Image 1 (tube, helix red, strand yellow):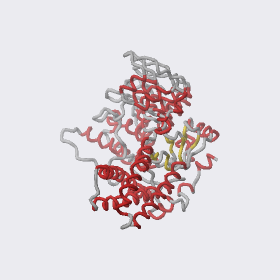
Image 2 (tube, rainbow, N blue to C red):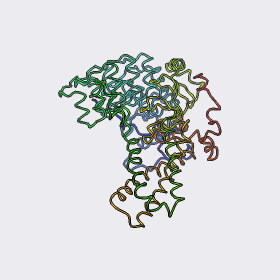
Image 3 (cartoon, rainbow, N blue to C red):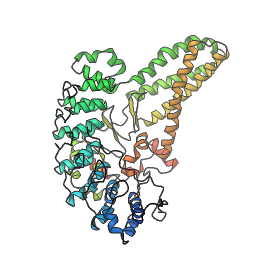
Length: 535
């Protein structure tokens, strides 16, 4: 496959500049010309979205050369404005004669519209199309905006382009379609959208590889399942005589190989490995190991080794340990079987939002936080509430999605985050009691091989519990989820107008705690454009 220019685009908002008043350009190297210094100054202002500073620079005599010029990386100012989604700056540059559809001066040669697709800036893409840029314009690798959207997992841009009539069968210089790229990058929602749009899962590129080959290189089980459900073959060979299964084996994607091997075996449901470790698409090795370690090693060691030595001398310790373990299993079963906040499909709301996608000019009544087009799930066919996300393991959207916990084999969301909070504390409590009992056993001189193995296992379990406990408290105090903390750069509502991090959900420590325990209603639900749209 062709190489995308992922990594070529620099992240926005990483500057320490907080405002236009504080704006200053770092000292320049002596060999830079005056024009190069001004270009750096202009690009820095654009990256930070400082429209006032951009106007000042463009009013200087040298501005015409800057608008037509390139920075040291070969990109024009309009490229950077498109990447940041700063439409006002884009329009200003266009009014001053900036070339709207020229390549960057590098090996990949992206055009500004391609960079707008990288960060999912639909309104900016719409602006370029209004200015006359062809919807299928290609970079030097033959990638159209549609292919770039597929490469970067931008489902909203991709849906918009399809509605606007983009050529869904467009291929790059290596014959790869958007479906090849989505499978290679491991984006199930994009794959689902493209398959429903009519792309052929059996189409081969210049190397005779199908999207199934791409999925097996990546190792994404959910993508492979989608392709198989739509008729993809696992027997096609590429120019190197490699089948998708061979590529999966070479990349050591063992779970994917299991899926490919067992697809035509109806007795797989009765396989003991499936019952114990789960199907290839949702294996539960961690939870199986967790349960077996406690039931088949921890409790026998406690009964045969610890109780005879310490029960009479420390009865309170043992009573506390027994109560703690009863609570542990109660919360474990509760969390394992609980509904974390699964969101039901809402096709009617999804179709209404789908109509909005093709008309960004109608988005003015919504802000980024409540715009339904930013909360569509093409897999579940629904418009998600704010802060929700599609879980790839559960294959459902979860309200206030935090993470999919492998120790309980379930998601943590708005409906079970409180019991999860107590579950983590109970695990730490039981762990501390276990350390005390181990200490008493060692003090009595009754150590041994199995005791030391137990100590190692206890340490192994303790570190993730301690880290998780601290993380749960930290996120509760700032009113964020694990998903939001890890992916905040992908969510536009976590950026201020200058691209810097901003948490719109934090209401202060006390109110954040009350909201976490569902005592008070989340502040963002008091204004409910998205919720009313869904209803």
